[in-house]
Amino acid sequence: MKRILTLAAILLAALPGAIAQNGGLSEEILSEIRTGYQGTPADKAVRNALNTTPMATLAANAENVAMIDTHFSDQVKTRGITNQKSSGRCWLFSGLNVLRAKAIEKHDLGDFQFSQNYLFFYDQLEKANLFLQGIIDTRDLPLDDRTVDWLFAHPIGDGGQFTGVANLVTKYGLVPAEVMPESFCSENTSAMSGQIRTKLREDGLRLRQAYEAGLVRNAKLKGRKAEAAALELERKLGAMKMDMLKEIYRVLCICLGTPPSEFTWSRYNGKDEWVSTKTYTPLSFYKEFVSADLEGGYVMLMNDPSRPYYKTYEIEYDRHVYDGDNWLYVNLPVERIKEMAIASIKDGNAMYFSCDVGKCLDRAKGVADLDNFDYESLLGVQFGMDKKERIQTHASGSSHAMNLIAVDIKDGKPVKWMVENSWGQTGYKGKLIMTDRWFDEYMFRLVVEKKYVPADILKLLDGQPELLPAWDPMFLPEE
Image (tube, rainbow, N blue to C red; front, top):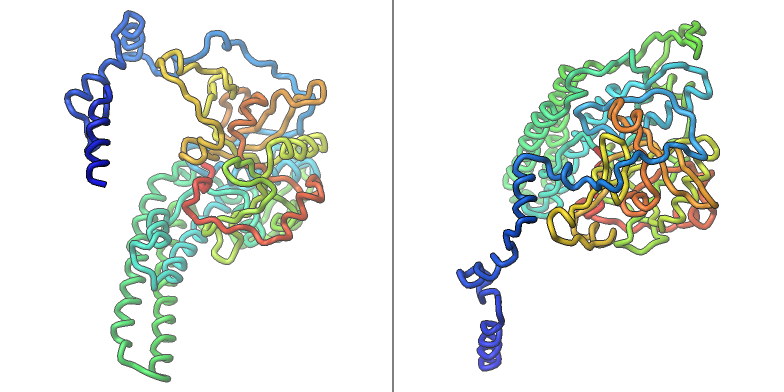
């Protein structure tokens, strides 16, 4: 065996440009690597341009600069563009905008929005409880256990997905935007989120330390005394969590405002004419103006070619509410997802939609097209991964949620799609247009009403989903 290894080392060293046995970069290897840049006039021209110009500007494909055709054969009627500003609440804006469109159409509400700030308040409180209870649930595991480490790495955030919208609305109801308007902290979440994350990590350590100290105290107890001591330790951890949540609630009230338990609201129709003035609770308002079965009436679809299709998956700890639902989805070929999307659009219903929005996006035009940029010609290298490989290597994943509202069908096939965004009046009149080729490569999730889902797909929900860990490559809360 030793002779074989020695011979292999000799052969490896004889190869031109071979990497050193220790994996490092020797002077000889560096000399070989340096031949990758020839410094031709073309290379120098690109280097000079990149010295003062953004790479995306130089990579813009001059053969694709014309604005795409903005006509769509089928489009859902919507009203008004929202703006999440400097926050990761796209999932909340997208989910509430789906409900908003229905409420405006059904009740003739005119220029109307639900309060994103109201639901965001309870989202943050519930996520704080999810983290703290997760720490209590994993108290017997070592600190470097992967689940415990993941909890401390992700104690709270402002991202999320549609299941969170469904659980939060069902539990806490809804209020109009003017009842609990946006605050600076709701529109600029980073500072508040950073302080809450730090506090929760400290609280998580205190819970684990209290539990470990209790184990030491109770180690020699037996029988009923041991049982009583264990119950007392459990009660102490619960009391500590309650005090911690009180502090988080205080921070949220200071930053976001205090959520109303009851409010009086005057309703106006689309002509700005007064209709009624009533007193509501958030739940009674939800039941009157939405009343949809958000937890049972919708299905999340996923296009993830890195896993088998026609299976259901669930991601552990990917929920907003501790006693709520994990993110559950059906993985399908993109062609099947398109069928349901088209059916919903033709019936006048917008959908929660998420994608890898930053890829190949011309932000000024508001067009996502695979031909928008040519980085290969600019940099002289090729990019060859397909969608499956991009997912497996963390090169691509769902990063942003919007509302799918339109499709353009020619000769029976979709050629482009349009989403309503929550970035204010950016892109194409606050919307983004995406080619069908781009849709194939960078669309990931779609939430549709069950009435548009074929029976063979609904049947898949009857089986036991495969449980994926929280750190799965597809766990990327939409921001």
